[in-house]
Length: 79
Image 1 (cartoon, rainbow, N blue to C red):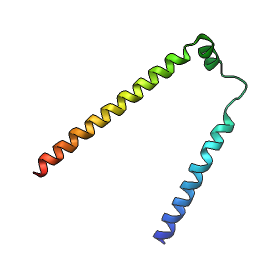
Image 2 (cartoon, one colour; image 1 turned 90 degrees about the horizontal axis):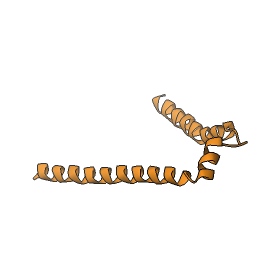
Image 3 (cartoon, helix red, strand yellow; image 1 turned 90 degrees about the vertical axis):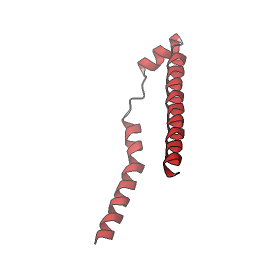
Image 4 (cartoon, rainbow, N blue to C red; image 1 turned 180 degrees about the horizontal axis):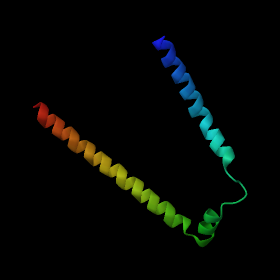
């Protein structure tokens, strides 16, 4: 019975994960996005993309550096 519940739960979760993006996609208003149009017409969209890219790169570099430090500490502890 437990195996059946686990399998059923996995099937339901997979179904929800597959169908959820479609419901969100259809829920959006496609007439116009005023904020995006204003940023694009002013040329500020490039500033937004640049700032978001820098934040993403910064977080990625931080996580890589943190992983190296943790790996080093694990090696020292094993020795």
